[in-house]
Amino acid sequence: MSSHQHARGQRIGFAQAPVEVRQWVRGRLGDPIADVIDCTGGMSPGPAARLRSDSGTRVFAKACGPELNPDTPGLIRSEGRLLAGLPEHPCLPRLLDLYDDGRWVALLLEDLPGELPGVPWSADDLRRASGVVAKVRRVLDDVSAGWLPSARGHAPLFTDAWKLLGERLGQVDPWWAKHHDQLAAHAERAATLIDGESVLHWDVRADNLIFAPGRDVLIDWGQARRGAPWLDHALLATDCAMSGSVVSAMDFFAFEPALAERDPADLVSLMAAAAMTFAARMSDPAPPGLPTMPATRARWAENLRRELAELL
Image (cartoon, rainbow, N blue to C red; front, side):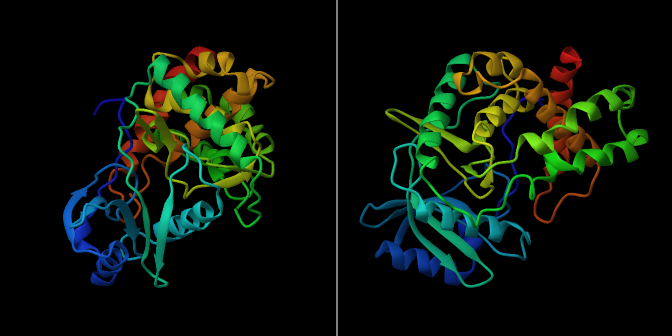
């Protein structure tokens, strides 16, 4: 398995969604569905598809029910609620409608032409992604969403999940044991760094951006949190290490204007907490409907380890 690739789950096709969901989509389109292109990316077991109606209307639909994964419907529900409250902006996806029968949840969104940034990240794509995050930050600064979970209260990746590694050092590469105490000292700071009340995307990665001529969009808002406003840029820096980049996470941190006032040690703390969490959990059973998750965690842990080894 390559150490540099987009995160990818294992989705069912749109045709396998419940008939009620498919009928809702058809009713919202107002015409029979003429063409379905199932999408395979993203960490969800539910269907995601680009659809075209007989009259030529194009939309993007994604959905999930608890029988596929118990957590994903709630993420889609949260995404729909947030997108419904955001102003229209070229860098934000436009919500058309939401379906929710208490079990299955589906979003109907505008169909966005374009492609994901490639991985490993190139310097040009990173600058482009940073520009998207900066534009979105200015929009989110005027948005209030007190119902969103706080990062400090609902982000075990950076708060306490990393502590699990200390109990599992015999199950991982000896490098983690050798550097455990040093990594833990960095990770201990992460919980205080993420605290805040700003609306955050909280999942800024290469597979959550679409680049298109004249318009770049930050997609997949199901993980949104309230936290420190600089964090979305810091998470983009972290993804440099997680997914691979010709620019190191620390180099990106250094030239990113949105992070100019931050201590570089802040990024080390975030990366250490994330790396320790992924390393500790890469042998956990795959969550329901997400068979690729253990391998994805292992890849992220190894990629982060490479950069942390140089920093330590």
